Length: 123
Image (cartoon, rainbow, N blue to C red; front, side, top):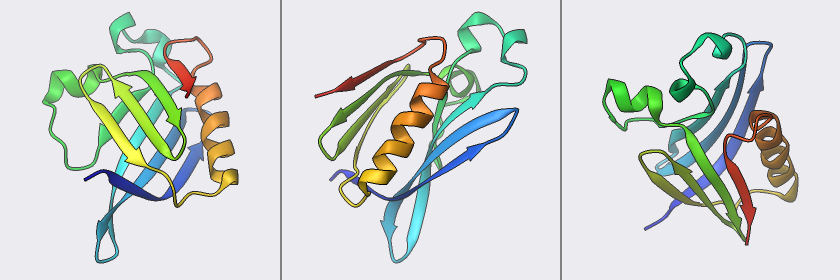
């Protein structure tokens, strides 16, 4: 069964741009799927560690893969979002989100992708 997005949250500072998807776990519980771009000191990181990091709360990729799990593609397919990172594909149902939420997602992805490190697709 596909995870369902209950709501999104956007945090933007001088140092970070974080887009979080709250995935419904039932009984009022959620876990977060996070797209995190470090703006402040990314330029000092090795090339392979730059870009938007993808993490899922409670998922253990191991230390090395966690730092290298960068976003490669974000696909909008109607109400389904396909988020492809270096080590995993996350597919979530965003049917509960408003059109305004989708606009927030699109604008956040534009800012996270200022250097064209990942693809954004609409199908």
